[in-house]
Length: 217
Image 1 (cartoon, rainbow, N blue to C red):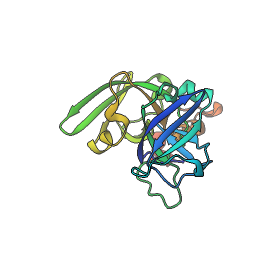
Image 2 (image 1 turned 90 degrees about the vertical axis):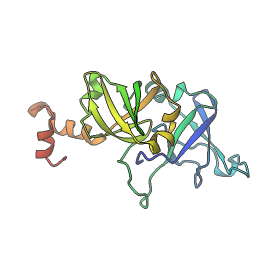
Image 3 (image 1 turned 180 degrees about the vertical axis):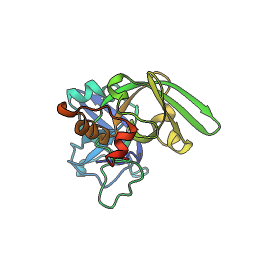
């Protein structure tokens, strides 16, 4: 599980044959640990004792395998050498929950529709389809490339978030542009709510009032 608070911007040093290696300053990582890479939960496959280190920067190389499914529905396979990625270690019982609970299981990927700046803030628009639109609500949680964000507005075929400079500059977003592909993870509580309320024998449309009546809000 993760929180959507990015800990480091890693750099891809090699990617081929469903394997990826990423350079990072994150420490306390061992083989078998889960790391969110652009929001995708991947398992470290190398031995901690063999991690490559540079004494000045104290960086290390983490190796991961990724499945055909991950390749199909996320932006991992679009990465190249020197691409940058958001990284977050799995949460512990001592972790502060500054974002929201994420599983690292990506629902879909989509394009950035537009990026606008007003004052110090960034307004970022993303394309959506009907399949994920039904789970997105104004002021609800959503994860984009592993970043915990709040939905600002919803339109017919897109939604927007408002990003503060701290988030924009300390994640991969400062390198992205219109047309860039990002990973989307829907708040999984929305999917649990759908399963509970959309039973065949008692199918109902999910509304804000229905969620409030049943204690989800």
